[in-house]
Length: 250
Length: 381
Image (cartoon, rainbow over the protein chains, first blue to last red):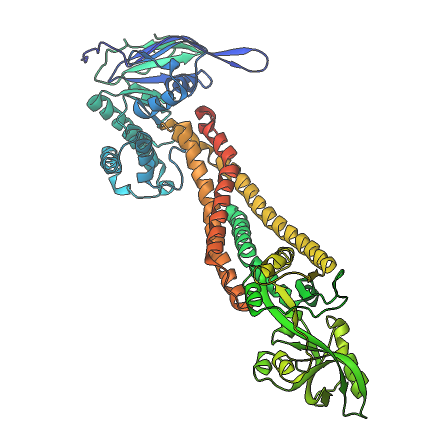
């Protein structure tokens, strides 16, 4: 059973290349990558260590500039944005979930969720409502004023997910979000991502090594030696989980 | 917070020191002026009308200082006290073996000894009460006592001067007495009543508040006297050499005190700089996370600058409190009350300087934090 295919991709990458200088010469990490991700689509990026997964995610988050190619978000070339506009893009369009050390130490759960709202200029009264709403979606309302460093690993990651969505982003970028969680906590985080995708039409791009996590995504992209291979037709989402992708299957 | 303890202490002590030195400096100078014999001589301005005047009568009776002139001098800025005196050369005869010799008698007001910083070697010196009571008492110099009574302890002896008998109540000596050890001193009112041919009040002794006031007061005296009476034959004497020595010593002390304060505050500044650099490094990942959440460079810059400012101005606020405690303690110790406006001005300067220190020392670490790249900050271990 397939859902409808949206007309416009939320992320569109064309011919994207990224190389790094290593003192001897240029080392290509990403080579002519093309990728389109549609609203409500959850895409897993897999590949061996050093294949360029995190580099691709960093470029998607505008943490890193590509060596060449284009990157459009909602049909706007975001590579031309100024430093301030890039920050605005990060606070209004994307939400990030990292593998570990995701929360700001010595701050409460409330304060961790408040930062993105402060940067976005949301008024204090509205901030509290949004924070409670985001925490409710990951079942963490009871930890509102709890110090973040006293939470368990699973709870910290759930708070990180809540923080990523508190500004209601169009895109969630997650770098191995379940990497340090046990199976049940990992499943829980993936459930939350599924809800955002289905309820909010949010696009989720996650880097993972876990085939089970990738299997819950609509599409799996495999990076090998900087070349991206995609399984599944872009924008055509199966309501069930995708099968595990292995190289050479595409 | 432990990392900033030294910084907080340095800025607190520096600010308190600055406030105390500026607020209490003038009062301390006044106390030193009173307490130290050397300063007592150095801050004295002697004003007198000369008897000898070239191109006129060789000697003529000098004019007297009018009471309006003396009152005007008392109210001059930088003047602590003014004493007036009149002199007469006369014969005195002691009851001891009828020793008789000539000596100078100075009829002085109640402030004379205090203004001149003179001290007795025995007995006591007279003050305002003896002048008001027109007491028939005399204070004699140590040498005069020896020549008249063959002892320096002449207290209680009777000294005939002119036609009256005077009770010796004290003997004058000490380093500042100078050639006054050969003179006798009686209350001015008594002298006017009982001594024939007592000269006019032709000499004034002006004690300045501090050594910084001496030159200004000495320069202003002739004009001020001239406003009330003729200033012809007026002579103003200042012990310039001791004054310059005192000023030089005081200047060096002030320089060292200010250098110590500046060094303390600069150390505090370096502490802020060092602490903020360490904080930026320790919180690299936090900076990366905040940037990933959408913080702009200026948000990070402002965050760290505010922390730096909070540190410096908070420490300065504690310094103000400590300074206030010190000023109150010193005020009660010195029995004085420095002007509140001066304290308020010092507080403003102290806080202002700490703000500059906070911005100056915190700016580079804050700038460095704001310029961090998100990827390297998030991956920082």
